[in-house]
Length: 276
Image 1 (cartoon, rainbow, N blue to C red):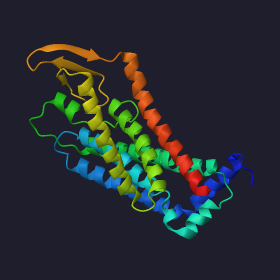
Image 2: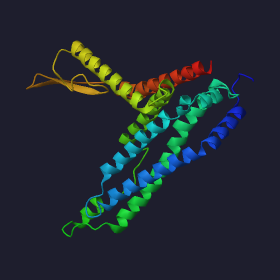
Image 3: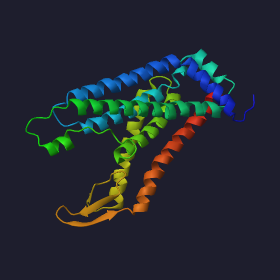
């Protein structure tokens, strides 16, 4: 077999994977759709006599994207718990790069596209259901009815919070995909515990470091990813320290991108190790 990457061979590998796993992927897809549809429907039906629950709408998007994507990614290499299936995967006539790209396409691209299509469709349906059946109390003014009793589909890519959730999806999925290779059993639970433990340790030492660098009382004190904080003595605000705008923009891209690249690089070498 030629060890150089081949898009034709990758295409055959992708078709083989989808063909062999169409039942499990289909069940997962149906389950995801029903979860979003039923939960969103219950939220809307319980809100027909009150304001549209925009916060719950955003929360459902975040939970579905992050939780659903994490479970899917953490189970991608579940077949390694079965020796015959693991040996068959390792012996497939494909390079490590082709198998690596397979995992990336399935967990990062395919799931993301399917989820966005599902959520956008259900969001449109439920907003239409609410707008056509909402029954605000009689005392509500006409202006309030137009503003607070009108459902608007989420702007998935325009709102800042949704952009953060999408960024977290890619980072978290990269961690979970690496975890599915590192922990053959209970990958989701073990990877989640590792992420929580690692973040707690890093946050603690970051807090200690910030206190060491700036002995003054600052608000917020020793926090991650703040673009500004104020210095005060409990009574008087002495000043505000802010990052330059360009630095803030650079760090908001550089830090997530670095974590993402590191996770996928580790995944590649972990997969290559198993190939050997």
